[in-house]
Length: 197
Ligand SMILES: Cc1cc2nc3c(=O)[nH]c(=O)nc-3n(C[C@H](O)[C@H](O)[C@H](O)COP(=O)(O)O)c2cc1C
Image (cartoon, rainbow, N blue to C red):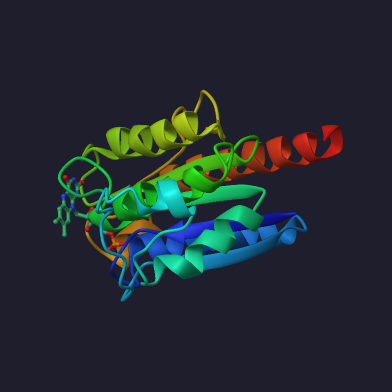
């Protein structure tokens, strides 16, 4: 069972670290994982040219072409974002919008895949929940199954306070509690759906 983790930060810092930790937890549970960082990648926003509606592929030849097959092949998707201005990063949003081309080819391209979100803010209350909600909304409207870790620690998913540093995020015990709970539920959902399919 494959899990794709997309890191929406342009840096190899806090978000990269926590997504890596999440994928390691899944490796230990026997999942095949792939880490895809948007750092240094050339992924332009959707042009809404509607080329994909006619030709079932995106006309823009950039790094998004590498992500399309990874999304298609994965059973589970983790989207991790730094909090920028109270929401998700523009880098991650561009990936979501460019998925229009996958939807043009197969309306159900994410249906029954399981999705979880990680948000890392410099402030303790900096917009993590809204950033997660934006990722959850993407999962809902594409037919994926959005999961959190549940009440008592991971209500919305994995939620971190970095204090703007890598060291800061490493010290965020509550954040790691929310990550462990969310990864546990995420992996259970994928396994249960695989058994029923
Ligand atoms: C353009 C920009 C906007 C930001 N806006 C917020 C914000 O609204 N709330 C917040 O908590 N942190 C904000 N931050 C801080 C980052 O979320 C924080 O430093 C985070 O750890 C960055 O993740 P990274 O280390 O993976 O790059 C912002 C940072 C940048 C560059």
